[in-house]
Length: 431
Ligand code: DOR
Image 1 (cartoon, rainbow, N blue to C red):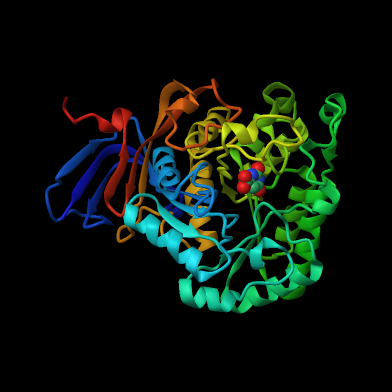
Image 2: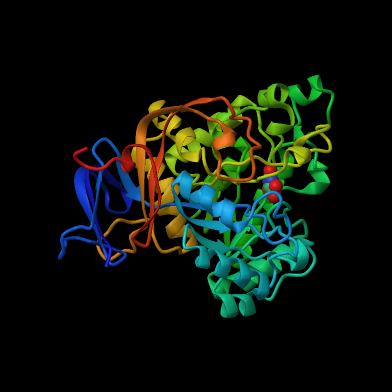
């Protein structure tokens, strides 16, 4: 039986209001209050944060169908290096993850690798075509999956979205919506505003996001279904979520590290590397995302890790693929917000672990005795320059290349197994 002692770390566990220097014991894959055996492994965590394993509810693993961009193996290796113990994979694969065969294939393959845990989300509509809702009840029964999303596209039809929310109610399923009316956004390459005007490119109005969030909230009111707003990016949509929450509606939201840091000016500087859906927006939207994350209106931080090849990102703004990778830089990007006093350490860990577990019904998000030992160690002070060539992900598409960062995940433990260890967490105690 593996027994691990994580000694002298700053244990931050918002699930039970803990923030204190303490030891943590792991026996037989579980966290234990009092150890019964002497440890086989000791990790000296002095100066490190010891937190419940990070959970990323929005990741593109690209398998099946686009293994040249990412595979389950490279994507989960990137997740482990980023400190993530569980990820939810998006269903915009080929074939589409809209059926039990694909869902089970991904989850079984990930389980056989023994690294970061993977939950494969299911498309809301057959083929993500927005026309016919999948048989959610049968899918949940056969696979246990109850997270549905057409990510990459929003469900445009009111009737189809209403049908999906109605079906979700008895299943306690969650609909995670990519809020974008394509009829309004026209899938334009960037936000509609001064930058798009200067670059003489078509832009996406905020209305394409806001209108769908408002429509979905109205449908939640009508049906009682559970809505999670993916990668929220605009002040107007955030206000709509805030009002829904004040009314007590079952609506939650996530924001990405890039929407917390970058404005649409980045598109002028980094070009297609900054092309992402939803688009980067002007400063007041970034500030609204930060304020809403700090006050809890936005519950979750999720990366929307979207690996693409260099060829996919080459060429014109109009033709390049949407997306940027995020798994291996999320922790440093969010630590920067802690250092700037935008977030407290506890709020950071709640948004990256406890809230995802709570909202998506994922085991984890706690260091309470008896819980599975899914644990992340973070060195908050380790300085480094972001260099995509060091990524485990196949994707190196990020506008953050060359940024100077401080702090990162240094150890990732899943079910009591150390799946990633580096830096100060890799030093032998006493040496
Ligand atoms: O930028 C994005 N890329 N946003 C999405 O919603 C989809 C993703 C992808 O699949 O590349």
